[in-house]
Image 1 (cartoon, helix red, strand yellow):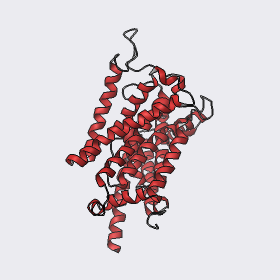
Image 2: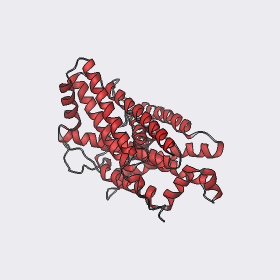
Image 3: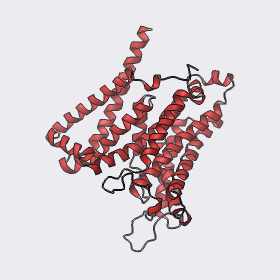
Image 4: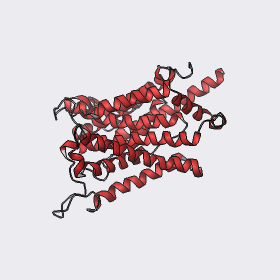
Length: 359
């Protein structure tokens, strides 16, 4: 029982300080690049802060972005515990968005009572994401396909599925009235949109936030305090030994990838039902890949996923405003994200070598 009730992954440790130092170093390097561009650092920081948290609307928008990244990151950490690498968050968001849109625009759904009008599309998005990731799980179990390759390639297929869906009037494209009609879906009915927590459009925090926080707590409990979490860890550490101990490793692998995909699909539903309200090509804006970075940065910690998602959510919002106000390219944010990954990987490798020498 003591092996199951393990607080270790929730407690601060060297990995936390490595992550903090990596982020601080990357941000400092980013400010150095701003100086090299000839932009006053003070102006850039002011524009970033204003876009990230300078108003109730900006703060809520940053948190909504962080929610999406957190859901994808949770899926990555969940699969990682079983030594599986889910890099298909972008595709799972895409299929989740398609499923949520189709259900939202299906007339009977909008008339459902008791909040089911927005809950049913979210559940449909979860099922779509689970199915999409489950394909990679089945391929791995049945034919030995590497899940990194499978989930990545499935993402590209899903992205083109979104494009195809909004290009065809027989699928999800809004009816064309003029040649200027955009290739996107109709706006989803108000009943299917996620309710605002404060009921104020100027503070667009929506019902996806408490759902995401409950799921984060649930993942933490599963990983740290349940038999399932122990089985995932055993499978991740030594699948062959776990199989000899009687564990259904194949079923466990498929199941955990499906769960990760469901979280990615839910992220797509939150983007569509909570912010954008219409499906269009590129609606995910690379959030699936950013969520992957959040999962890597967390180093297996649910707390780290939440912190990393907030960091990257604010980086995205602040970077957009920094470009508009201070003329600093948003590509700088991507560079900072890359620096975080590189410094994190380097520091982690150094720690592993130091621990190996001590051993």
